[in-house]
Every structure is written in structure tokens, then in C-alpha cells.
Length: 222
DNA sequence: CAATGATCATAC
DNA sequence: GTATGATCATTG
Image: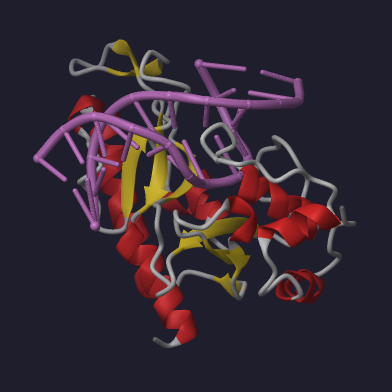
């Protein structure tokens, strides 16, 4: 447990202090048990880092550190620094979206400043043996921001035009739309082909692996 | 074996 | 159901 950081440097310092530690060590320091598997604890590593860095543990809208305008993201990587999973950002609004601009969207707000915490998280490593990498602060470059905006526009246009069922994880250069639900039976409101209300699977925005991989490469110069 | 589609826990 | 945290697991 930890008190919230009062400024960016303090957050960076405490995050840097975790670099090289195993998840077991961090869990012990925070009096947490290490699960044998993430199957029923998919958000465990993220929650652990929230606890260790003084972010609010649990559900709350907006960034993890609202006063600092910083979003915390753990990212599982292999020994070469390649992300092992896509990065979930936020759920996607499907109705009432006409006139919504990228700059005022929830996803743009969340990606404005991100504290990435890489986790060496190869599958053959027990959860407790996975280690924390070098954390760093990232803000999208003008080019990255443009790519995100373009994908967002394409996806949101399709949703607004009633073509949500035609969207799959393949579209988008850096951003993709995928299910984000308890299961495939979950339903939420959306716009149908003829503009009528329909029910569909809730979706979320995810950053594709090549994009987050490039962010890591840019930062670590490899 | 990467990537898309499906799923798990918890709070409210 | 929505929003937080993501990874699992089947498909191509």
C-alpha cells in the first residue's frame, strides 16, 4: 500500500524503484497472495501495480492518477521486449456519438499520458517469478496521435453508420475494436443498418501489438 | 504461432 | 449493464 504520488516525478521515482523486482516481492510488500494462474485473475498484475504505486484500487472512471493526468498500463512482454498481448484502453461508446470528436473522446484523454510498466511475463514463468521492467512515461507523438485518430475516425464512422457488425479486429493500423464483455451473450445498445436501435456485444478499443512494440522500441532504442 | 474473438473478477 | 483491471483460447 502507498499514498498517492503528489507529482509526476514522485510517481516515476516509485515506479522506477520497482524495476527488477519479481511480482512475488511486490505482492509480499503489499500483503497480497500470488495467484497460481491469471485465468481467474486477469487483472491481478494491473491491480498489484496500482496498489504499489498508490493508485486507487478498484473501479473508478478516468485516469489512474487524475491529479497528474496519467494513466497506468502494465504491459506483458517477452524477453526481447515484444508485447505478448494487445492493450485494452477503454470501452467504446456505440450510441449518441454523432459530433463526437477525437480530441474530446475518452480514449484520447486516456492516451494523452501513459505510465507504461513492462512486465517480463512469458508464459513459462510462474506469476510470482515474472519481473517488473523499466517503467516510462509516454505521450503520443504527432504521428502516433494521427494514426490513433485516423483509426478512431474509421471505426466510429462505421459505428455511427450502423455498420458495427461489419467491424472486426482486423481494421485499424494501430487501434482495433474487439469484444469487451463478460461473455458473448452480453448485450448493449447500438445503431442498426437502417439507423434503428439494436442490441450488440459491448466493444472496447485495444492497441495493437506492433504499435505498443514500437513505443517500447522507441523508448529503449532497440 | 500470431491475431481475433471470448472471457474472468469485482464494485456499483 | 458499465467501468475498472486485462488475459485466455480458438482460429486461420
